[in-house]
Amino acid sequence: MNDDTIDPKGFIVTTALDLTLPASALTPGDTFALPENPGRPLIVETLYPHPGLPARLIITTHGQTTPFTLHPNEPVKPLRLLRTFDLTCQLCGNRKQQVLDLTVHGTPQTWVCNQH
Image 1 (cartoon, rainbow, N blue to C red):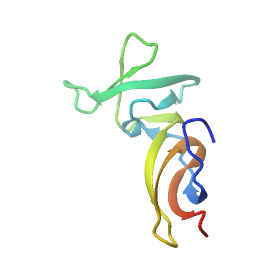
Image 2: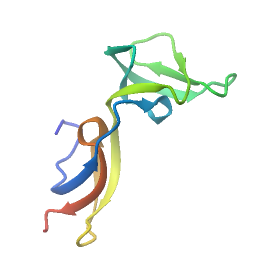
Image 3: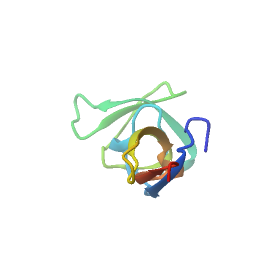
Image 4: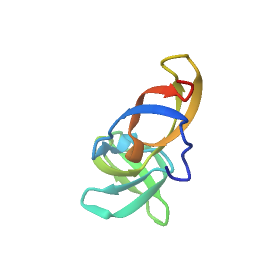
C-alpha cells in the first residue's frame, strides 16, 4: 500500500477499475493522463462546468498555466484516484473508514474485519 492509504486490517473484496474513465469522474487531487499522451501525468487542481458550453468541463492542472476543456464523457486514463469509503464488516457490522487508490486497489464491494 502507498503512504496515502491505511492497512485495512481485514479482507476487502474489490472490483478492478476500467482502463479509462469519463472526465466527469475526476476530482481535485486525481492524477490522470489523456489517452493520446499516456506518458504525461496531469494532476487535477480544479474541475467545473464551463459557464458558456454546458457540455464541457474546465480543468486546471498542477504546473499548467492554462486550463483546458473536455467533454464530461471524454475518456481519460486514471493514474491515481484516492477515495474514502465507509466499510461495514459483513460478519459483525464493525464499521471503518478506508482510503483506497482506485487505480491500485479497485472499488470495494465487501469487507471482513480482522476479528474473523
